[in-house]
Every structure is written in structure tokens, then in C-alpha cells.
Amino acid sequence: MTSPEYVEVYSANGQLEADMIRLMLEAAGLHVLTRGESAGAVYGLTVGPLGEVRVLVLASEAQAANELLTAMEDGQLENPSPDSYLPAAPEDDDSELE
Image (cartoon, rainbow, N blue to C red):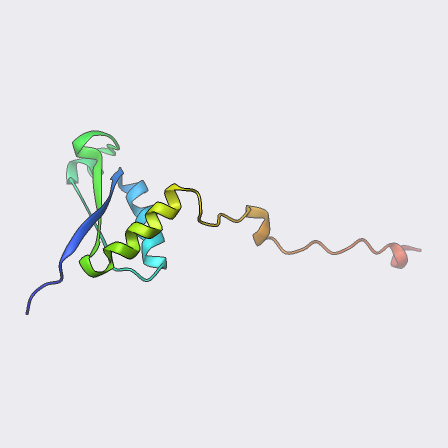
């Protein structure tokens, strides 16, 4: 049995950025792995070769991943306001106070 082929679709500056990209791609149903130098994670490096974290997807899903990443970089993905998650405040009803 052969293992699936993964290809790099994004090079992140640190594990935090890589995890955000990974979660976005996983939310779209893609299979994602991240690979980086262990020294970068241990020391919290986010720049240079030790801070680089590669984001990989199945080769068969690379086109879909690249389309999502392009849409993200172009600002086309919806980013709802934090207020949109809050329940609506009840309207003031002063009739009970009279």
C-alpha cells in the first residue's frame, strides 16, 4: 500500500500562522499536515528557516487549497464582525414600569 502524496501549498512564519491556515483548509474539508523544524517550535521562532512551517495538502486537493488561499490573500473570504455572534438585545419595554 502506498502512502498518499502531500504537496506544499503555503509557507508560514511560525506554528501559529500555520495552524490558522491549517484550520481554514480543514474547515473546507481538505486533508492538511504541517511540517517545521522542532527548534522553531521549542524556542518560539517565527522568522527564518527555523521559524518556517510548511502547510501541506493531499496532491489531489492542491488546486482547491490554492484557490482558497488566493481568495484569503485577496480578502474575498467573509470575516463576520464579532458583534454578529451576540444575541440581539431585548427592546426597552417601559410599560411594566408604569
